[in-house]
Length: 462
Ligand SMILES: NC(=O)c1ccc[n+]([C@@H]2O[C@H](COP(=O)([O-])OP(=O)(O)OC[C@H]3O[C@@H](n4cnc5c(N)ncnc54)[C@H](O)[C@@H]3O)[C@@H](O)[C@H]2O)c1
Image 1 (cartoon, rainbow, N blue to C red):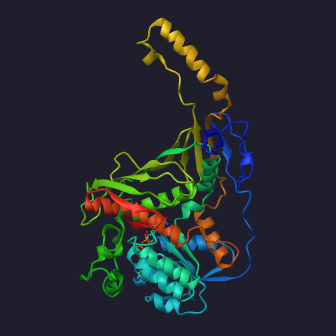
Image 2: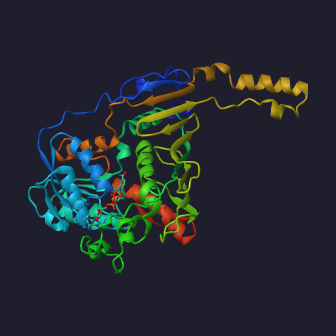
Image 3: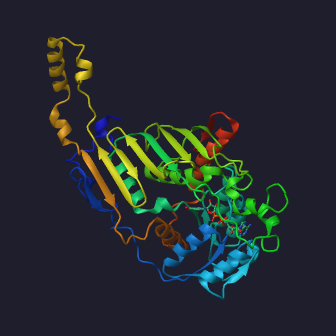
């Protein structure tokens, strides 16, 4: 393809974005440093009125955040809650009142005909089993990310989704945000040219950030069904730390890959229409949180993405550090041949500068005066200055309005619209496996101590 035929090359003023068929309507590039509002102008079909009764399986931190967002969507009621620790069932009553059906056995919840949809927010090692049981029970399912603890399990979920014809939304909510949507439009309109690199990082500097969640003082074998929690994991004696800090153990969690990388993959795959990487190389270590955990607290992973119809070949760097002295923070920065984009859920910052082609003082110092003059004339002919002027250069920041409800609301809105038959989910089982499978390569490589290869089309380790 010649550069001028490639829509992601030459983000020219004269082409503008209005011609690119953008879902959020036409807008013009701003002058350097200008901030613009980020709004959703199209694609929000009015909600149907059909009432949806919801069940929550796993009433921990994310189950509660999920349920809060779900209940903001009109026409949704919480009917039942399941959890293995009685304190979480009491918390459900504190939050949502008496009258809920409460159980420690998710199968009792699934057996109820009055429940249309369920949220699965248990630890990762339980996702596959509960999701398949829920689909087979005829429930629409919102499953927290990572969809699976091991990539191979994803195919069983895809098969169940297909067999039952059921609805499954995976819960990387950031992908549904205005920020991600704007980034996709910008990328597809050529705002950064062809992607060459992605830089994702997440730094944390607190016990909570490092998954040291508080253990409730009333937790004991009478209030916690520990044997059921273990599930398919190796049997062991009662252990509060494993139950409440399950992320720290490979038997139940997925490390930073399944906790954090998977969100970035969902965003990246959505923006680029990508199926994922072909290779990963991971390193890191347990540097500080020596609390019995068996997963690293510093992880660095490099991924190779192949050239496809929707993006050039590029490399990605994913990094998480739980001992970020001096503070925390995170970033997701896409770097292309014509610009770079920092993508968030509520904002996108696009920076475009002209690529310096003419020789500068550094390399000219070794040229004779006559050759310097000749080279300048040669470069002026080759790169006429007016071409650079046509390009939209500078920095623009798009920001969501203050009252924007956020990606979590949008993700549930999309899920319930699918339940009502008005839309398709944005993160089905195949999308969920592509994101989880790519993320989990980080663990595969780290624990094997070598690079690993992945087939992103078949979604299998090579
Ligand atoms: N989308 C996001 O941004 C996001 C954020 C945090 C967590 N998560 C995901 O949500 C899930 C839950 O994470 P969390 O931080 O809420 O953990 P958590 O430990 O706070 O909550 C998990 C709950 O599940 C219950 N549970 C365990 N096994 C169960 C079973 N078999 N049946 C019923 N209940 C069971 C536990 O008692 C606990 O209350 C994980 O998969 C995690 O990756 C997603």
